[in-house]
Length: 467
Image 1 (cartoon, rainbow, N blue to C red):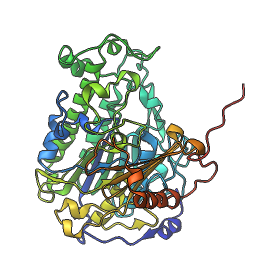
Image 2 (image 1 turned 180 degrees about the horizontal axis):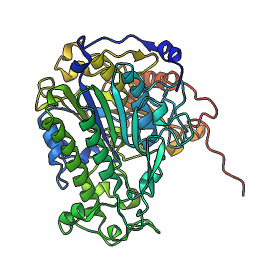
Image 3 (image 1 turned 30 degrees about the vertical axis):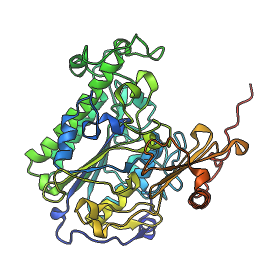
Image 4 (image 1 turned 180 degrees about the vertical axis):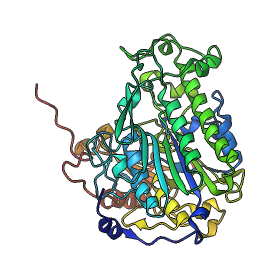
């Protein structure tokens, strides 16, 4: 753990929403789906898949229509969530960048400092065993799940981490005895039960609907014959043989199981009489994927937007977000406030009276939750970068969305500009017609980021290994 004086030096005082006792501080449950596109959710327009419990969450709370993920892939999104910084500043900017470091201040540490019991249950992705990024050294009192996100490709793992120790599953994966998603739900429900008398922050980064396409039969069978199936296909050597033959049914079953268990979490909150003191937020980590037999085109997983996972077009970074808090957040409400995952940290800090780390990019959306649009601060811009695709930067400023692509290849570098107010699908590049906007966006691309220590992979292509 890092020294206390280092933590205090990194903070500035945040506004206090609750001034009473610790018992009055609200519980916060943040549920993050994996590779679930904004178009995969019923209340965002999905027609084939069924998400009745997520839709109910929206009916009982607020639906955000312009919410963005931290990145277009797993690890950097989680880094943005943890640090309140966009990918031009946060530690982990692409998959494989390495762990969070001791000087990174996380949402877990912020809420611990406000007297909260904290837990992360699911896929971590920003710190391996033996590194400085493990959750028990980054502000979480309890952790259960995958540290290494590559291991999370199997939903029947041989082991997972229970805090700093391995929990073995001898029957997995051969006998398929423990489905990891079910283990996460069990742990999340137990944490809520055990901590109902003290304020808590529960972060549930589920692994569904990330590939492998694999789900227990009780969730698969209702979809067999109800969604069109293609000829058998899938990744060679995979262990989920039957699911390669019915990938659409498998994906639909995974969505159904995710939806069901979000409902179970909300139901427990209600049964324990905690609803009026618990903020529940649901989101997803990036756009839908086409890997491993998944088929976002068939399900229209990116809705009206261009692009999928790993793309910085809207379909790769536009994501669902729903907030439910009976008596505080108006039921059946929606907002077009432009927000992003890195806003979660300052929002929870304002809500709980916690201290806010210096140097974050997030803006609290608490006024929006409470229907106080007149006091809602707005982002000057949103920013993303990734070393994927030959290097890619994107920014949104008001109605404008800009892209600078192939940044690792200066002679091939291209600039794209779209007016989202009339071109939500990013089909018509209007850069030539708006040189002033292009100049403004170029300033963001050049000066709105820090250069990471070591190789700046955004502008340096990875060197090929010599044979």
